[in-house]
Image (cartoon, rainbow over all chains, first blue to last red; front, side, top):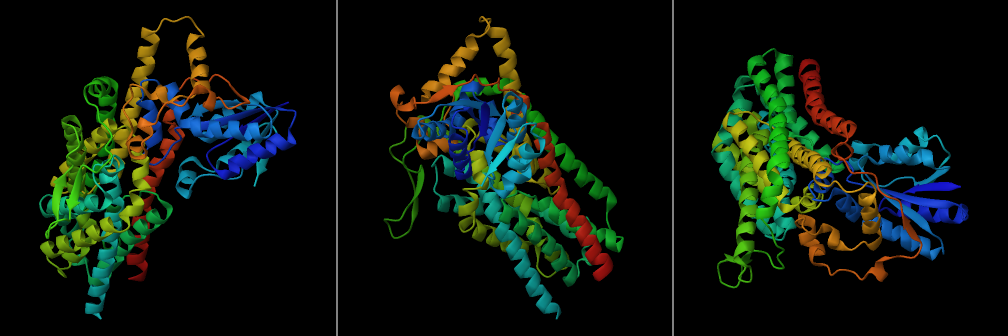
Length: 137
Length: 415
């Protein structure tokens, strides 16, 4: 069984990963983090676009979250795969979700302004993913 | 009764100016404060000074347009003035609460246009010119940003470098009886030139913000003759300065935070382009949004640069398939900050000191239990999502539209 856990830097996302590690303890868990997401002034997206090596810049932006995911997995004596994508979080998650049997994600993350620009990510995934979705709160 | 309304008008105008100062200081001085060239207090002082110069010179043209152009000055009764200012203040209040950069200029013009529609006095030709400028200005910002990003940015990046400062470049020397501005003596000449450039362009942005925004706070009061244009400018800049010294501390961290992700060179380019567009429009007497033009320039710059990289990479690296992917997977495993080598430090890096962080030993970073899938190729299209761009543009359009409708209904039905 393959489980996708989309994460941002919020506490809810960490709880989602912990939940996934506990409930799907024999599953193959992949942590997905999305960087360079749209914002009002497009600062992070543009900073990745302007780098000489965009892939490296994207990885650098996702580093904090993937490191944290690794630490949480280590605490549970488990292994997780990590993958980094760029752009709109909801779309990036839905693009990869076909490869998995289930999705576990935190109920919210991000400010009101973020949600105005990208929408409610958990809700988007919950409504449109073709696989079972667990929203952790 | 009328004099009470004038006092209410002045208070609402001051409130509008206060909020403008809060949000504009962040946009103008975000890079300068983020890279520690100046402290927040110095930034507020410089912003206020240059906004005043901008409002006193070029800004008069915008005040003329908004106080006696879109609608005749005679339409600004005391009640109408308060109504128009109320809408500008409401839009700013909402945008500050939610951290959404709504355009004061567009909202204030919308409220005046609503008044004009309700009373049948709207100068439609002028309004057409203004709305055209609102379409042309962001497109110009996008085109200029795109051109620079695609053809010039790598060359500029190779020639200009910006270092990190541990102490502010300019500080207030309070040791004497009179506070004086002092220069940081430990800085190298190259840092000094780079920092001066960042600061100069921040001041230029302050100038353009003052030129464009002073009218939003006081134009109706100037129109109805409650105050003269000079008194209006002093009131507007006083309130804007107050906002710069107080709530800008917050917006420098929130609104400015977005720009802070940009490399310093990019922040300079977009500030320069945005400020120039707004200064030219202000000279022509056309109110327009600094944030909107700057944002379009950021999208253009990033999009132009990203699309160029993709083309060059395809042409220049005839490596066997798969090699790039291996490299990527390694990169995310070792996680060393060497990935950013060659790319200039961002404003945020400079502030937090990340750029100088020592390379972590690999064993510390290789957290047990982490494997990596190869990341998808990063494209300009994925970074500048069209649907998200459309959402942001919709939000830009929404506030002036709501302002026109609300103001029309208020003046047509209630007053």
